Amino acid sequence: MKNEILKRLLSSSILLPVSFFLILKGSLYFSIFLSICLIISLLEWFNLSRTIYFKIIGTIFLLCSFLSSYAIRNLYKDDINIGLYFFLLIFLISISSDIGGYTFGKIFKGPKLTKISPNKTYSGALGGFFFTCVTIYLYSYFNIYFSFSLKIIFYSLILSGINQIGDLIISFFKRKSKIKNTGSIIPGHGGILDRIDGMIFVFPFAYITLDLIKN
Image (cartoon, rainbow, N blue to C red; front, side, top):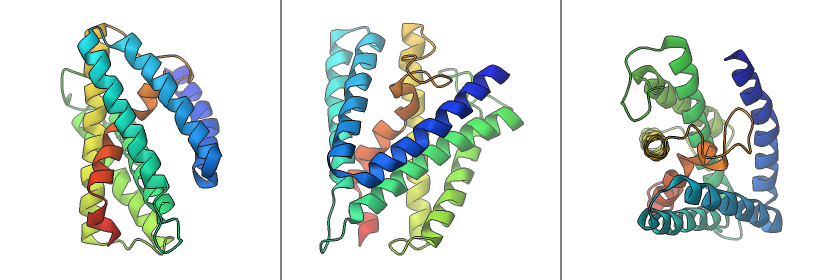
């Protein structure tokens, strides 16, 4: 267990700075980064799903999800790339929700959330929401485009909830396929889909509802 946590921390210490650099850099760097993640995710999904129906549906969904994230990152208003701030908002919500869920779940344990994923607990779900609120407070404190308001808190909690539901959906397919991880490309985490299982559901929803917070 300790070795697994150590691998997870070491992978995150490399993966997160690289991801943030490419997101901030934008342009061709971001496009290549997104394309590589999409290709690997599609390969993992094809390996994960057992029927041609789910392979096709999953492929369409992943394409829409990645296109949504690309569209958000490249959103401009008055020659200002406000899409970057929205993208980081969504990205941070997904990460903090995952970290909060993992941390609170390990520390407090407690009743299981669902049979779909035995490792998910009610304490972990609450931890995901708690970490999301803390992260959004810090992000809005240092960001001129967002203020820490009831609207942004409510919206962030919805995205955190969607992130957690997305995690459960991918866990359901992994359970059906009798595999632990979608891949092994990231030590301690598994595959790309294991790492972005919640994000792929958050970005399409965020893209559709973006007007709720950008005005």
